[in-house]
Structure formats: C-alpha cells, structure tokens
Length: 64
Image (tube, rainbow, N blue to C red; front, side):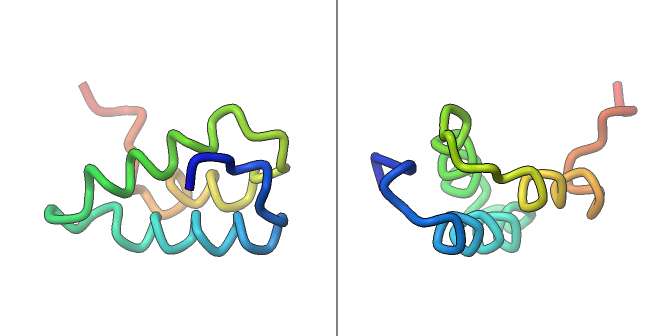
C-alpha cells in the first residue's frame, strides 16, 4: 500500500472505511492512522470516507 493512486476509487474508499472502523481500537489505532495518512497526497476524491472521522466523532476538533 505505497501507491494509493494506483487503486481505483472504490478500492481506496473500502480501505479507508476499514481503517476508520479500526481507528478507535487501541491495538490498531497506529496502523489505521498510518493508512489514512498515506491517502493525504492522493489525487483520488476521498472526501466522504475522510469526513466519516469527523461525523462519527472519532476526531474531536473541539477538545483541548
């Protein structure tokens, strides 16, 4: 999983949704974060899967 742009959109979305599922599990959090970060520079439109992190309150921007 080094070249995220080599994936199709559906495959990339599926990978991100799985990373989001495991995001709150302590034993997989670091791996999930690394997977999500790899999509940071991707040219694939992944707005919906990434936004799930905020809609599902997995990332709280209001916390100190």
